[in-house]
Each structure stands twice: as structure tokens, then as C-alpha cells.
Length: 529
Image (cartoon, rainbow, N blue to C red):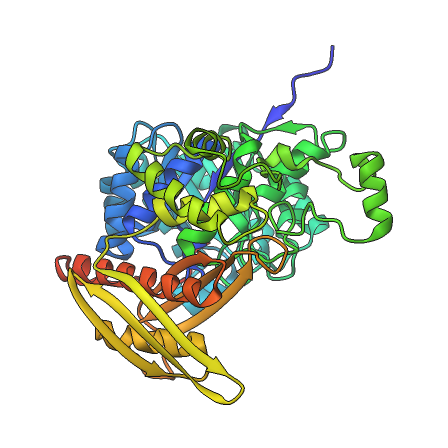
């Protein structure tokens, strides 16, 4: 009888490290939506945030700990007493809380960032792990920049923190520097040279600066690591983290050379990817492995011929295995409400009656504009309904005039908390004119930071999905304090753009009102694993 495959725990840090991507910040409600979906996905641990970073982060971690069942809920803390105490306050409401504390161990970080000796850092790490262990026996310690640390010293630190109470030791490649062969050797060295290593789980946290995060993570698993820290869509600082969907599907698809299992419900991967993209405003590139728009698309004639004869000729996994909805032409304006409700359920949404009626009305209007309607169109309609923020501003009317001999002009009507306002503006194009008119009608001074448009499906009648990012006014040589994203979809790209802009303005207004009633945030200094 074959031995039972060993399980690898999946530690998702989308809401902490992933949210540190510039422009990817989410509010508390958005984080809760993502956390609930991560629980449905089946991750073992959710790193919900950095509680001492700001009152908003503390609130998000606390609510996730109290409201999300299933996974362990972790809060990150520097190796400082106030950080650890704050993290414990945030996660203690969870049935399975974890404190994750970290301190750099590379000579580069010790000398230039921490101004500490090896001995001082070792003493600090032991003291703070012991403090964390006084609150919970579920303590994780990360020697930051472990991949560039002196191996003898790293072994000494790992042994000492396990003795102090750490039950998970995470080995981060903080700057994405190492290679699979090197990382495999490092994990094997720890397994062989740390006497009490069997008292803790070895975890790894790899960054993607050289595009090796997933390869390094899998090499570490083969060497003995049994927890992988990763993010949905590979979000994270700089080039991002190891992508959860790539790690999990590699373990599932190549079970012959990677005989390990996870508890991930892979059929939830696609839905989770779409949700994180929408909530963070960080769109997935078309050629992204597993979840990109082209991951299961075939244009070359030879490939199409092979796929038609046998899917495995050019597909090593099925779209269904990640929950990717097929682009079937099955719905139209004559389908009826029950057929629409059934399709909504099949693509993974559970709408109440009010949302379902609203979505169905929008869908019927879409059917009048499009010849073919796909599952992705249903997703776009539902997402606009479900993820819509409070309606401080409601767009009622958009009219644009543009042409080769005309200067683009737009007129809009917007309800501002119930008061109807109309404005007309000119711009460099019809989209620019429409957004300028909305800005004038609302009376906002926000700055448009980014504008991205993509077709949801093929064809000239395809819906366009627009993402905009806005921020409060800031000096041109400085990063904005907060970037808010908004999304819109429509067969008319001007309407989609206007909807996305109003969506972002509503989210910005919601954030401003929340901020006005919250203490001033204080972002801690220093990098994280």
C-alpha cells in the first residue's frame, strides 16, 4: 500500500503582504469579503493584516478573527512588545488565533536597518517569541531575509526561537534573491543541523523579484517545508509573492514528482482570483498562469485541432478544475428569470431576492445590446450589483459628442445624495470629457491615478470592463496616501468608464467618512518578511 501523501499547509497573506502592493489597499468590508472567500477556498491560515500599522488594519484583523470561521487567523507583529500585544488584541477573537512575529537575521539588515549585533538580535527574537507564547501556543517566527543570512547564525536563531515557543518557523526569501537549488539546500541544512526542528513546522515565504517564487517554494517543500506562504494572483510588494493558485495546481497536476496534498478546493480558485482582482483593483494579466484570460485559450490552428480531438493534447489541467466558467452561449433575453438565477448559481453566486431582481434587469438590458451572452458577462453583471458601495453618487445620464472634426464634449446628470446635478465638460476624448463632467457635477478634487480597460469576451459587441484608480490631491513627486479603485462594465466603453469612476468616487467618499471618525493612523517603519 502506498504511503499517505504528506499535507502542505497553505498560508494566505493576500490581506497583509498582498495588500502592500502599491494601489492594492482594501477597506475593512472588502477585506472581509476576501477573507470569507479564502475560507471557502480552504486555506489553512489567513494572515489578516498588520494590526499595529493603523486603526483600519486593526479593525479589519479583529473583524476577520471574530467573523470568519475555519482557517487560523494570524496577525503580523514586529519583534516588539507593543506590536505583539496589539496583534494578540486583534486575533484573540478567533477560534484559532496565531501571532506571527519577525526580526531580520541577515548581516545586511542587522547593520544597516536594525543597528543591532547578532547577539542582540538573537536575544530580542527569543524574548519576543516567549512573550507571544504567553498569549497563545500558536506562534510563528520569521527570520527576515533568511535566504541571505549566515547559515550558522540562522540555525542558532531557529533553534533558540523553537525553544522559546515558536511552533512554526518561516524561512523568507524576502527579496527574491535565491534559486531553487540554493533554497532546497538551505531547508535541508536546517532539517539536519537544528536539533529541535521536528518540534516546529518549517514554512517558506518567497518573493518573485527574479520570477522564481513558486519554483523556490516547491523546492522547499521537496526539502521538508510543510507550509507555503503565498497570495492570490501573486500579489505583493515589488514583483509580488509566490502565487497560491500556481503552487496549489503544481502540487495537484504534478503529483508524480510532488507527492503532497493541500486542503484547497481548487474549483474555487477562479472565483477567488476574480474577487481579489476586483477588491484590490489589481487586474490579472492575460497570460498569467492558471487564472489569466489566456490560460485556457487557444488561437493557433494546430492547437485548436489538437484540443478538438483530445483536450489533453494542449491542456495539462481542465478549466473546470479551477472553477473557470465555460463560455457557453446559453442565455438570452428570452431565457427568463429562473434560467438567469440558475446560471448565477452555477457561476458561484448566492444572491438575495433584491440583488437578483436588479441583476436580472441589467442582464435583460445587456441582452438587447449583445448578440452572444457568455458566463463572463453574467459574472460582470453580478459583480456590479454585489460589490457596489454606498450610493452617495448615482449616475443617471451620460451623453457624449465626438468625431474627427468635433471637440469631445460630455453632459452628465448625477444624483449627489439625492440632489440631481447636471454638468457639461470638454476633454481629450469622450471618456475624458465624461469623467471631467462627473468630477464637476460631484464637486470633487480627486486625482485620476490609473485607467485600465479590457474586453470581457470576444467580438465587437463585447462588454468592456473598466478599472479606475483615484486618490486625494497630492504633490506630483509624492505617492498618494490612499488609492481607491472602482470598476464598471458595459458594452459602451464610455458608460463603463463613467460607472467605474462613480464607483470609485463612492468608495472614496465611504473611506473619507470612515476616516473622519477614526484616530489618525501611524504606519510603522521597516520592511516585512
